[in-house]
Length: 468
Image (cartoon, rainbow, N blue to C red; front, side, top):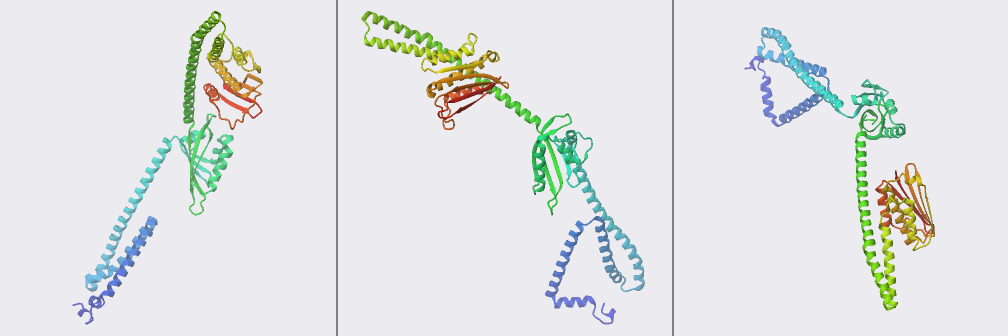
């Protein structure tokens, strides 16, 4: 027994066994506490080592392995040799060799694992860089990785083309970037960018015109992302992306222009159809209704001769005469003038003379002969209808004594002005009626517009314009 080998003293194992039997609960608590402390220490050291460099981890593992070897190897040798000095001496030599072998294996497998992790990280990094470079090359945007502290930027191929620079590394990037912004946009862009930088914002988007190497300005939208110091929020890096939207805007402008042309063509078609229908009704009134009333007038005259002029026949003759005059007036009003046979001033003068049959007013027309030569037939008809509509409004509401009409050319536009000295009205309170809406519709078909200036007791001035 081991007790006899130590001069009758109880062995360490026996004493530990007796202690466990006497203090089982206390020992369990102590062991649990030690295990818990060991586990926490292990996890803490593992977390600490995971954040350290590979060299520190290798050194730590070697030190721990050496300490464990020194503390446990002697005890193992003594137990194996059973306190035989000769065997212990021989095993000490083998112990050194075993330490070298085992420590080498531990360091080998540890270094292999560290190397594998580093190799995987390096491969992922290279793969990420390759994808980033491919994305930069494939992207239509000009991209710049700008170091705010050194004023140096790394730019992609598209940004090189936009800036007209051969190198991917640009020193003094911000100044060179600002120089290519349109002078009218520079201050706005600079102020907006500095306000974003001085704030705590991370993203911004600014629109401006950018000078490209062919000396033309392109419409671009610049988006940027700011990487800031987590403690001071000071900007460290700024990622710029310049997206050229010129072609998109040109396409939208062309689409809008086509839509407007289609809308104007449709409006002209509607107006043309309306004029044809008016002409048909005018001919129908003149050729049919007027003929019937004319025959009715002849019959009443004949009856008046045969039976004498009675009061009933006289009233019938007066009513027929009034109906004939009204129908002739309506027919002449709705029937469009033939500008192949008459001029625009003559058509307006005839229109005014018809109105003067009902109300007397002074009239003045200012229109040079050279202007009419620049107008198409559709434009002449449109101007005639605008004048007609406004004269009807003057006749109904204005109670005017003087009306003037002028048509002049100004900056590639025709400007029609109709002025009267009538009662006027409050243009903000009075809503536009059907007549004004008709005028606007006809002008818009030719890309024109309308403005009315009036006030109570101040008359009215209508100005219509359209491009030649």
